[in-house]
Image (tube, rainbow, N blue to C red):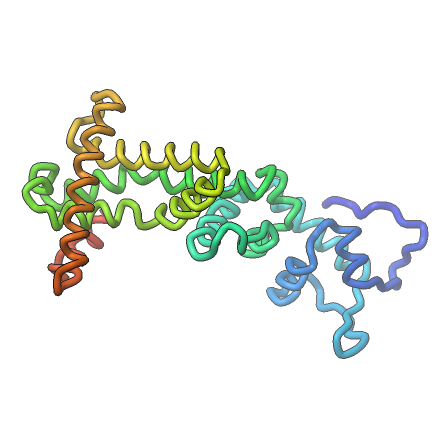
Length: 255
């Protein structure tokens, strides 16, 4: 168990404030509150209506949690999962590293052991979503009749592609908004995401052995067909045109 830094003024009975506990442990106040509510650290002494007193037990517990989180091989995955949820539901400016740390149940410092910045967290979240896009899309295509079955049914194509981009779309829009303001790294990342999505959409039609550019070309054709169908839906009376199709897609996505 990690030992707290030496403090000549400390004693087993000495109490200190939340701000001092934050300074000595490196754990943000929001995370300490989370650990307290979850029963992961001893209950603090209530000194007044809005003030708690902490002691060496709390410091040792926090340092132990930090050490366990840093050594946990699944720690990075939990942080990325928390980042995905955060960036899918809020804008980049609204998300903080502290939010992600609290959702992942790790200290803020632990997040920074894996990622240098919030920008790196956004990139990791996007890459994680893209990593499993191709296999899930291919499974859905197979379950819904194969590539030629989709070609003959634009509604299925649109639904399958809509499912493909659903998880990535909020972050892609965020990248687009930042790129429009002149943020070149976001523009580069947006291009990477679009190429990856196009290749994933095209692979079922070209096969694994085809060159990336060939798959991207096929994917772009499918995407154009999908968007044409979506536009037709948008000006028509029904959305979506077939409720059963959405159920079929949901079942196919679990394959």
